[in-house]
Amino acid sequence: MKTSPGRLMMPLSFVGLISGMMTLVATPPNMVVSSELMRDGNHGFVFFSVTPIGVVVLLLGIAYMLVARFWLSGVDPLAANGE
Image (cartoon, rainbow, N blue to C red; front, side, top):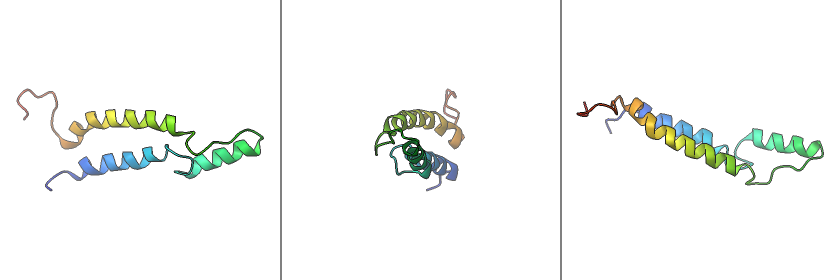
């Protein structure tokens, strides 16, 4: 494909990290926090209770990667003639 590995692997790693913020069972810390809340007598999380936070982080991640793609490719976005 003649493209930099960093240009593909960096967004992939961000997606892997952000996907853990979408549901209760996506990562172990979400389950541990929910269990500890229930153990202390509070209400635990439901399956999609962490999704609103995950959606905000996802949108911020997309915005960041739209800007960072220029750094990963080595192209200067401010160059007038695209060199």
